[in-house]
Structure formats: structure tokens, C-alpha cells
Image (cartoon, rainbow over all chains, first blue to last red; front, top):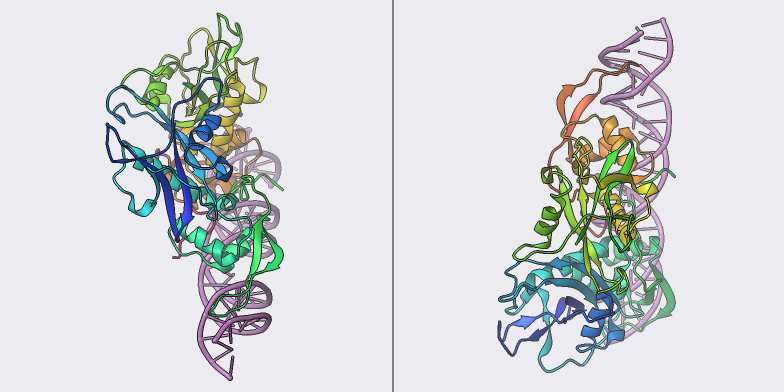
Length: 216
Length: 216
DNA sequence: GCAAAAGTGTTTAGAGTACACCCATGC
DNA sequence: GCATGGGTGTACTCTAAACACTTTTGC
């Protein structure tokens, strides 16, 4: 069981990795994970594994990706991995163990086994769900300006997103609401931005039927 | 490893189930599946398992659903199941083993363990992908009239689909094309329908970005 | 006043649905 | 001819992207 844990920092999508001290693949970087214990579901187990790396309360979203089972994915005895996507908001800053660090997904270090493939799967899942769900709540702080949210979406999607349209799409779908508060503007001036929040902090599909909708 | 194998027949979505002869859950109906063998991926393994029930060449699509791992999902020793969705076109009619039969998903018999939950997960995955992929190819025969395709989509989705709009949506997306052939009309008359086919028989996402598209 | 950033108004484009209408056949 | 089912033309709606414009601040 492995998890691609992602967050946004410095306008980049980062992944949580730990450096292997022992063979196989010594010094390469691995996804956090562990073995399924008795009496726990895979979801509960992966949260338990991740608790050794980050504060679990900061894990705002966890979901299954898929099973990776290529016979040669790790040397030696056959190991099947159930992979997960985990998300952490950008305001969280968990203290990490010595061997653990964040790495931009765009410029990964040498990774162990098939962990890069798993990370790319995690990134694609996140990108897809940004489009038709409210999953942005899992990357954003509790309150934020539209400009901050635009930077989060831009970093996750890998292209520039328009703040204007982002606000309108999420608002129309009922995923975003203004708190009524504003923040003072920065040193270079400008109108003070309003603070927004996600209306729900549970995953919701906001654009269920792309086509072939049931008759209204 | 378990598979929810679905097909359309008699305007209904049907699932492949086999009746248990021995405990636990004697006489209840189970999903086909088996254990992962050494040196095979889970995808290859589930195809091998299903080969005992149906002709594998008729399996037009197989994909992972998720891992079901509730500790009490089966009595006795803890068993984790990787679940799959399998699809069979409606013109295929494989000869089945004695203990195996098709059952409408709308009126399932008594099922074993959590197999009904897995089947409903399979149905939801199919319904979602009908909306944004060309997955209909896996349920339809090689050539078909739009009316036949409308019945397939209607049965799978559980509501009446318009033949007019179905043809237009799939055509505009480049998933559907006319073969140029026509069939003679039925005994009650009517214009002879044209035969269509899917342009690809591999899964393709036809409506990738619902929103927040990259700039064009 | 002026630059900067936030936020709103408005136009445009495209997809999808609904529905009227035409087409080709059996009887 | 007429019913029947297939297929096309077209209008309407809705979403979202693009962009101009207004608002509100710092300096």
C-alpha cells in the first residue's frame, strides 16, 4: 500500500517522498506506505501509515487510485501495491522525519520501483477531479482569496487559470462562497481582496452528467 | 479478485453470477473471480479467471474498480478483493457453465458477501463512463442501428435516451460513424435504418475537460 | 493622480436538448 | 394513401471563456 501525497507550495505541485537507506534502490526516493494490518480497511491502513510522516488531521482527502501488480515492479518476491491519492492543504506545514521531504512533481529525483508512475497517476486523478468536483477544498486553506485559489489551481493543473472564470464556475456550482471578510491589499497596492471558502469540505461531484442527462 | 461482468439483453443490464454449492453462503450468487497467480498482473489474472465462465474474446473491456477490504466482508480469514468491471457486447451469447447465469442488475437474487455492493459500483462506473467516453463500443455489436444503440444506452443508464441526440453527441465527438449500409425495415414498415459503428474499439475519453480547459 | 490588483458586466462561442419536419419503407 | 419508424434541420438554453470596464487600495 502506497500513497501519492500531494500539496501545493511555491506555485508547484509537490509530492511527499522518503529516501531509502537500504537496498533495494538505496538512496532512491519512495512513496510512503506500509502493509495492511488485520482488522483494518485499506483506507484506514493508509491513513495509519501516513500518520508516521505527517499529522493525519492535515490529510484533507484520501482516495484509492488503483492496484499496481506488474510482476517485476519490485525485485524479489512479488508485491502487489494498492495506490492512493492523498491531499494536504497548502497552509499546513507538517514537521517531517529526517529522511522525508517534498519534491516538485515536475522535477522528481530518482524514484524507486514504479513510484513515479504511481505519482503521475495520482496527479492525473487530481487534475481530472479539479474539473468536475469540489476537490480544491483539499488543497486550499480554510479561507483564501480568489487569487490564491487561482494559483493553487494553476499549479495543480499545470497551466494558467483565469481567476475571473474560476470564481464564476465554482460559485455557480455552489462550491464557493464569500465569507464577507476582506484582507488588506499588498505593498504594491490594489483593491483589497475578499476572502472565500468552499461550502463543503467533503468531496462532492459538482458536474455529474456531462451529457445524456436524464430528462428534466 | 472479483469481476462484475455486465451486458445488455432484453433491454436490461445483466450481471454474470454463479451459484455457490458450498458454504459459506450456500446457494447464494457470487461474482466470478479467483486468486492472483504468480507472474501475472491483476488484469491478466481476472481475464484468466473469467475465461472459465465466458469466451475471453468476447470481453470487450476490463478495468479496475477498487479494492474492497472491509474486515468482515467475508467470514473467517480476512480476504481483500480487487474488483473489476467487465463488459460483453449484446450480440455475444457465450455458453455458460451449469451453475452460472445472467441476472438483471435491477432484480438481483440473494448475493453472497458484498458482491451486490461491488456490482452497483460496477454499474455506476459504467454509467459515468457512458457520459464522457466511447465505452458504448464494449456493449454494442460491431454494427448497429441508432435505435439499437439507443436501447443499449437506455438500459445501461436506466432512463430513456433520445436516439436523435445520442447520434449527434457521439458523432460530433468522433466516436460514431456511418458504415454506409442500411438494413431493411421491420414488418411494421418505416424507413430502413442505417448501420453505424464505433470509430474505435479502445476506450477513449471523448469529453476530457468539462471545465477549466487549458487556453486554446 | 497613477499604478496595481480585485471584482463585475457583457459578449461570444459551443455543446446539448427539444422538437418540428422530411424521408423511405411495408402494407 | 397512410402508418411507422428513421433521420435531419433548427431553435433554444446553458455553460463557460474572453475581455472590457469599474472598484478600491498603496504610494
